[in-house]
Amino acid sequence: MAGQDLKNNYYIHAAGQPDLLRLPRRIAADALDRIPESYRSAYLEEEDPSKGFELSVRIADVIRDSESEIASLTTRLEKIQTEGPAKLATVKQQMRDDAVDTTLRLSLTKAGVKEELLEGVIALLKKKNEFEAEKSDDGEYAVLARTKLGLSTVDAVVQQFVESEEGAAYRGKRTAPSAGSHFNQLQLGLKERR
Image 1 (cartoon, rainbow, N blue to C red):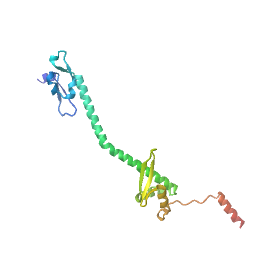
Image 2: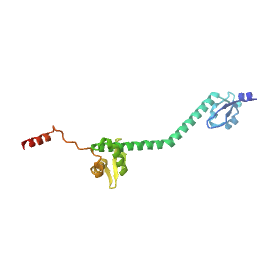
Image 3: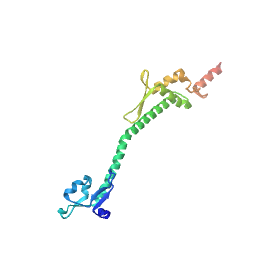
Image 4: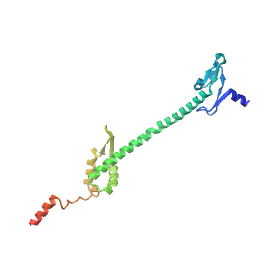
C-alpha cells in the first residue's frame, strides 16, 4: 500500500510546515483548490482537459526550494531589522566618541599637556564636561563642550583647564630658548658689556 501511495502522491518538505506536504500526482480540476496556492502552478493541464491536471515534480521542487530560500531570507531580514538599528547606533556613538577623543587629544597637545598624561586629562575633562559631536555636511565631526556656562569650543575648555590650578600639574615645562637664538645672543652681548 505504501508503494501505491508513493506512486500516486509526491511528498516534500515544505517551508514552514512540520509535516510532509502530500501532492497528488494527478488531480481533478475541481480538487485543485485543496492544494496550497503556491503549489498549484506545479500542476499542468492534461492534453485531455477532462482528465484534470498532472503534477510536475520539477516545478514542485523549484517551488519548494524557492519557498525555503524566501523563508531563510525573511528570517535574515527580520534579524537585520531588529538588530541593525542597535548596531548602527553603537557604531555612530563610537564614531562620536572617537571624534571627541581626537579633538581633545589635539587640543591638549597644542596646549602643552604632557604626552604621558593625555589619557588621564581626557578622562578628567570628559567627567567634568559633556561633549557633543555632530557630523557636518562634509562628513567631519564638529565637537563642542557643554559646560556650566553653555556651549564652548574644546580649545577654550582645554585652555581654561590648563591655566587653572588643577591643570597646572599636567602642563609640560616651558622650554627655554636655545642658546643660539637671536634673543639669547643679544642678552649675552649685553652681559659682556657690563
